[in-house]
Length: 77
Image (cartoon, rainbow, N blue to C red; front, side):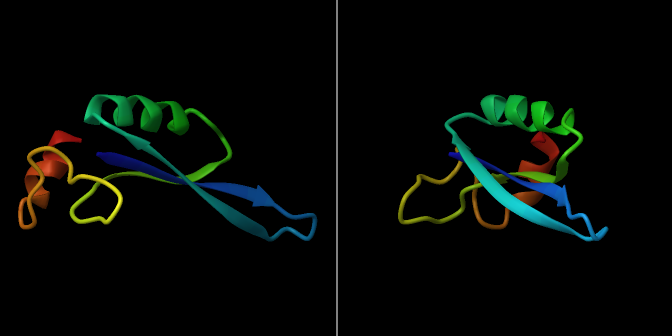
């Protein structure tokens, strides 16, 4: 399981801005990467990340993802 997390930057009339955070889940890293790359093409995206589940009550850990093995996971991205 992988989670794509992103924030949308919205400007206010006074020149300030706020972020609205969102997330989507994906079974494969490839599907998560497609969503991530599509988000990068949008001007309103402030930040985006792909996260592998390490531990969760709701989701299974990302395949081959082990605590202490985050460097290998980052290399895959």
